[in-house]
Length: 434
Image (tube, rainbow, N blue to C red):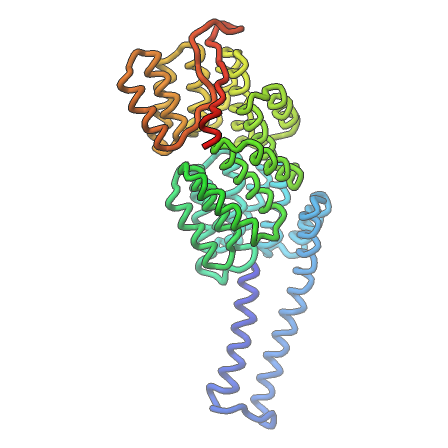
């Protein structure tokens, strides 16, 4: 049973009492009716039995959840396993165990526990949601979308309150990764309608950034920050605002936001990778490399590793190490072959090494996946220029400008330290002031 199952039982018993007392007799009958009093005693006994059975279950679950929130994963897992041994059909112990394993970055075990929860109760939104989250971390976005869909649909059919609302945020995140922005916005709207305004505003902000509508993204971030009381969500919103400010050339604001996000959520390594990306953009390559080296010391998910490798490749290409950059970008792309961002990074490294045909193919694929990915158009315009196709270059540059892409490097044809093209930083001071 999950929370909604228990709630339905209690509501059914209450409804039964009302029907018997009022609906059948038209008024509240007297306790002097012997047979009716006997029926009430039976109902009361059922209530007592249910209460006595559910109370220890929820007491153990609450202790385990408290331990998980404190990141005392060993204690949380111990309590979950004790609960599973005593109540093998209680779905919540399996779903919580899957969340604990995910926190420990033991992805296979997390999937196993979520799958067992689904086998017991296929209507559990949290079980589907937890498995979707793990699949996303492992880079299996098709499976993640499948599971997040079931999570959200089950939540819609139930009295989806409290923590079950997170399923819409997970599904929106999967949609964003899969470049399905309209679907993500629909889930954001669902969150707002159901009282989860901070989560809904956050999702809208991320989508607006993906659509190059950066001012709107910042507005939604500000709205989310004004209503959220969740520390983790607060850090995520700050990171989203940092990304939007960074895209507008407001690097000081971006650095301030991402620094706070890292302090609030130091184990969320994508914040640290975002910080490295911003540092590289302002020419602080050594600082960016150090930041990425720190992240590299921990065990990363497939999703995090792909982003890390891509950012390392960008630092390498910016410092003139094209061959090393190509290797890193290719490794990242193997982990996420359909990511526009990683396709652009790989294309950039190929371009810097003079392999324009392969670079063009990658960039065209990125645009096919996400027609709003501005960097792909700008990089392809550079490739077309190198190939002597001025018409194609002008057309792509016009689209990049329309999508408000702010280029921060210029690729020059000159010898580099490892035989590739030198990447010279071109600060767009005039654009940064606009």
